[in-house]
Image (cartoon, rainbow, N blue to C red; front, top):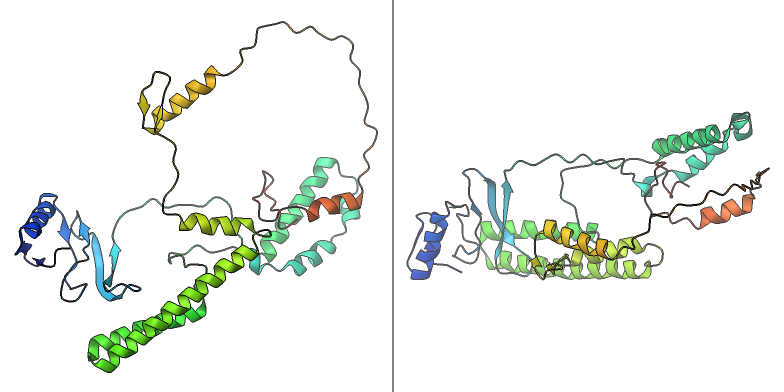
Length: 309
C-alpha cells in the first residue's frame, strides 16, 4: 500500500513509495489508474509494459464486501484463434420426440434389405447423425465472459440494482443515496449466498446421476493445480524441467521392463477352424445395454454420442 504516491507525476513523499516508483520506472512500466480506488488513495494499480496496452479503464463500484473499488479495463493483446474440434451440441434444447418420430418413419426393413453388414452400419450411422444435426441445436461460441452456474435472474437483477444505486450515490453524494447503496449491496450479498448454496446442494443431490458436473465444479474452485515433480533420476540429480522429468520417468520404466529372449516359436501345423454359421441377437439384450449407456461420455471414433443412442 502506497497511498502517498502521486501517479500523475510519479512522485512520492515517503521513502518506500519513492523506491517503488523507481522500480516501476526502471522496469519501463506504465501505471494506468488515474483515480482513487479506496477513499482518496490510489491503491489498486494496473501496470503495463507497452504504450496503449490498457484501454477503456474505469474505476467502478465496490468489489463485493471490500472497501476497494473495482477496476475495469480492456487489455489489448494478440492471441491465437482457437478453432474447436467437432460440434458442441446444446443437449438440453434437443427435440427428442421429433428424433424418435423421424427415425420411426424410416422403413428399416425395406431400406436394409440386400445390404451387407458394413452397408447396414453406414446407413444406420448416417441416419443418426442426420437427425442429430436436424433436431439438436449447436452452441454458438461468443466473446462474452462465462457466468457462474448459480448466477440466476434474481442475482442479475440485484447486480443491476446495486450498480444503479452506486451511480446515484456518486452523482448525488447524499446520505440517502449512500444508505440506498448499502441496502442494495446487502441484498445482493444475501442472494449470492443463497444462490451458491442452492446450486451446490443441487450438485450434491445429483452426484450419482451427473458426477461430471459435481467434480467439474470442485475443480474450478481449486486454487492450485497438482503438477508432477520435481523428481530425482537414477543418478540422484534433481529434475525440475518437464523434459528432464519425462526422460527420468522413461528411463525408470524402461529399467523395469522384462526382456524377452529371442526364442523361435514352433509352428503349429495342426490348425483347427470353427465356422460361425449364425448370430442371434435378442432385442431385449440390446435394449438392456442401451439403457445402461452413460450419456455424459464423449463419442467414440464413429462420432455417435451416447446421449443420442
